[in-house]
Length: 147
Image (cartoon, rainbow, N blue to C red; front, top):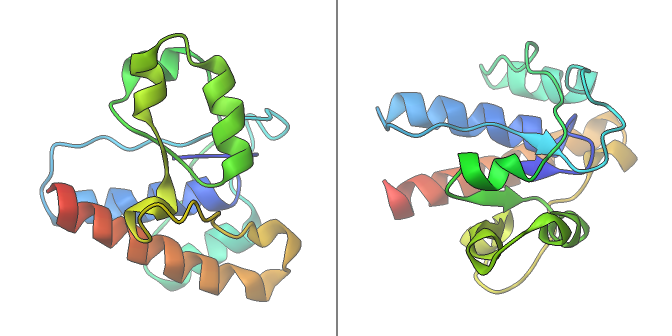
């Protein structure tokens, strides 16, 4: 799960998907990262932690990591939260195989719509609940499709 700073959208997606993976006993691994590195080493935004906690998911121990080219080697699918993030990740792709791993997250819910997950950073505390709900809906769609 990749977003810009790895403190809002991708940690939420990481937490939700982790919970669903455990509930479904899947042999999948989920991680998250950001493309800008501005928050590397930080925990998720307090409102990301709060909204997840309200839904029984603890993401407070996650730590922001920078997306690197080695992530292409370590993961089968790289879900990006927005088109600008996709562009940043694609710039690091070394091969066609790397490029094929990059998928817009919400395209699993809205095929070929190329929609961004709204960045709640700009919407205040109330903006996190609708983002959580959309991410959860998409995570459930991914589980249903691939599990």
